[in-house]
Amino acid sequence: MLLNLTSLLAGLVFGLGLIVSGMANPAKVLGFLDLAGAWDPSLVLVMAGAVAVGTLAFAVAGRRSRSLIGADMKLPSARHIDRRLVVGSTLFGMGWGIAGFCPGPGLVALGMGEGKALVFVAAMLVGMGVFEWMERRGRMATLRSA
Amino acid sequence: MSIDWNAFTPWPALAGGILIGTAVGMFALLNGRIAGISGVVGGLLRPTRGDIAWRAAFVIGLVAAPIVYALFAAGPALQIDASYPLLVIAGLLVGIGTRYGSGCTSGHGVCGISRLSPRSLVATAVFMAAGFATVFVLRHLLVV
Image (tube, rainbow over all chains, first blue to last red):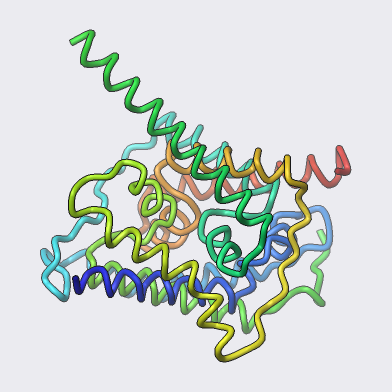
């Protein structure tokens, strides 16, 4: 129960950060991605602020075997760079560049009652569903061939 | 490249970034997890027992953020220029791509760079490059 509450709070603070920084606004994100146009470097400072605090927190979190409130630590340990990582990130970057939305800002804009954000989030969920379907099919094919 | 000094908002950007860092930091320290939005949301589509409520709570927090923000200040105006068909294509690409590549701007970008994860550094470089290239093609070659 406590973990659900801290999760709600983390989501809320994350969303407030996206609003305050201007990153919930796709036009501002596209202003950063448009290197050849009139470039808006704001996103660099958003990342700098987030990574500065994040580095401190992860330095502490990485050394713990339990969280501060006793939860299991589930930080990823994978280090390999493979085709999935590169292909997936390329597709994501293309989608990001088309609309200026990544998952967090899409959900925050949905909370502002934006109809266009609803369309984006719905399509994103379908995309994630397609991924789950492909994964399940892949797992079953592996099971059959084993 | 020319910097658009009128659009550049260094202080709100830095302040918002610190809030985002605080959110991912508290999530790592309290919940023991990476606050990667695509992973949190995507996991809801692969429901396992005991793994749904915290994910839903995080998403509710994100969606409720503008409502809480509106209690203290006037909500910011959004500008979404993409047409509906383009939003559908963008959403599909973001949905499939983030799950296939195991992360997005939050999980790979903010959390991964904070942890100096080699996977995340590569992922972030790749999606940034793809984003720059896509905007260049759409705005300067095709002029959509």
